[in-house]
Amino acid sequence: MVLLIILVLVLVSVALASTYRLIMLRRGGTAAILRVLPAQGGQGWRHGLIRYDEDRLVFYKLSSLKLGPDSTIRRQGIEIGDRRSPRGDEFDIMTEEILVTSVSGSQGHYELALDRGSMAAFLSWVESRPSDRTRRLPGL
Image 1: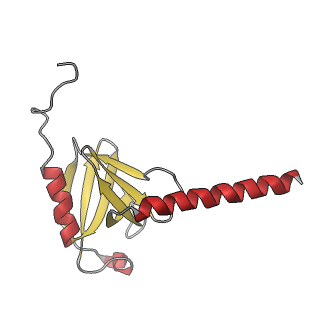
Image 2 (image 1 turned 135 degrees about the horizontal axis):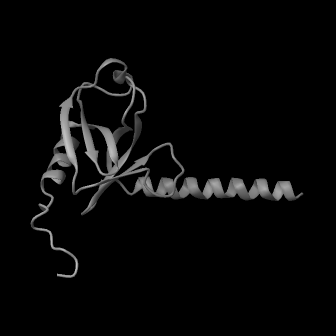
Image 3 (image 1 turned 90 degrees about the horizontal axis):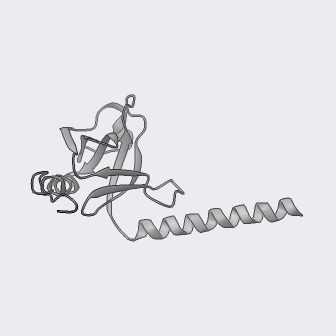
């Protein structure tokens, strides 16, 4: 009987987490494919949504039950690498209209795949960040 109660509680918890995650994803965002580097060939890509705010980009995997974002990239200190087209077995999950760029920050190294319009929005978000010199120090 206790085992059945525990099983029901686990199933209800999973259902609630799934519902919460679905609600979070349905709020909107930009469709993206992201992978954490280092990665081999076309391995490690995850579909999801990205959202921008003032200081960070957050990535939510479509196949995750985590209540918060799966990856976070801080805007300050972000470095954008070269852009490229998908190659090899990446075409299994991407089209020719997709651009892939490497992104490095204090949280790690990633590759981000976006369509051309979304890539332009991402680069605009990065380029419009305030410079380190114009940011005020706390307490001043």
